[in-house]
View 1 (cartoon, each protein chain N blue to C red):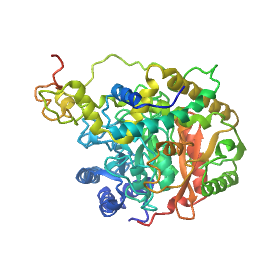
View 2 (tube, one colour):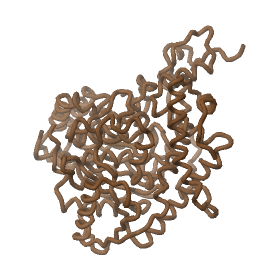
View 3 (cartoon, rainbow over the protein chains, first blue to last red):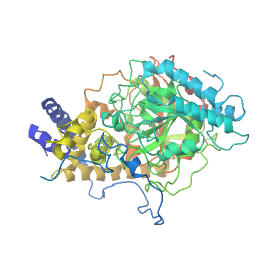
View 4 (cartoon, rainbow over the protein chains, first blue to last red):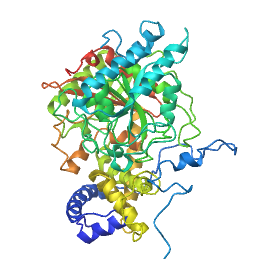
Length: 99
Length: 488
């Protein structure tokens, strides 16, 4: 496994993460992420044959409650933090999606 | 400052006895914030008027024998916990104007207990950092030395309590973010067991690790805040059903028969000599109170940092996907006729997130991406299992693990921020408790020659906060470190 990251690797990850990076950021991140990933490679030496992955430490996996209608936020409250001018018709608005 | 009433318990009792009013004490702290916080930057927002209105309401309606355990007592809240009608930014540009329509459960429980919120404290952006330098609103300064970092990410809460700008505060701890700043600022910081305190209304960073907890001057105050905020919450399905013990009762226990373990091999490398000295002295104090101290091994704890930084960033990359310019206030300004949805997302996030947040989203996205998932993310989850097992085995022979909270005292602002990996390595003693979901507390353990605070940390069995608090209290009773006040 190689921890060398090329500029195009960084661009691919940034695209997956919905980030637009400057050229300087791409260079810095390529170097820093490679450093961190190289350090993380120490894990490869550990025998994990009998270790199942831990996703969380909860002993309980279900949390049932009665299916009762309860009060929730009003539409105005829920929309109050929408970016300026996008909530006036009662919706979150986004730029046009369909051509 | 009212020299006679400094702790939450003292203030609560003085108000209950009619010796002071909530208005008096809240005004006093607000004045001190106004006088001092210009040099500390511990607060993102001070809720001056609202606090005084609520304090006045407490003073008007208070009747003798009111059982509310924090009636009229001032408190501060880390700015990543939602407060209804009060801006909650997580110290990020992307949430600069976000005003939550609801309170976090920990906040509403404090207020139901009578506490008065004085403001929201500065932190590393979304809790990501160990120095408080990753805040969109500038770093917090350490009250013991203004050129030093207060630690992070709950640096504002720790600095505010240390400087007596507020007698207690809430923080959040994903990899040490309560305990490390508590150690660097000389206060008590408690990370509860995973599931002990509701995260409803906590802006999520890494959901399998995040916990909300108190920062206070004394162990008793930490017990009091935990007692109020802990317990099951129907709004957070990860809260544990266990009932909450009365942590404040029988705190002054005898430590005879209590077994403590020191993971000596883990402490062999990279610790500042003055931290080692203070830690050895603390071990002697624990022994003098009747505890037995033995060597233990946590063979996989040395791998906790890579495990943590792969898992926490993977979870963060998912949790922070919601900040996309649609729902939470900030949207990049773009030409509405030609902008695509995708460009709006990308530009909003790129201008709204700071460098460390972007770095962690990138790292987490990489660890989760096709071709790397097994080698990084899955492997880290497997090693997490081994770290958990190490602790389980250790708790066969000891009741708590003790180690330093941080390998170094407060470092100079600007000193480590340029090298993210070096900054991450500072979390070596704190991250494993999060990975294993265990409760852990940092208590003041003295000072370096330069008069920078040192903390000692105890990690306990799941849901044994009561045991940890008793051990911490026995230690605290044998020193007066918490009474030392920074000269600010």
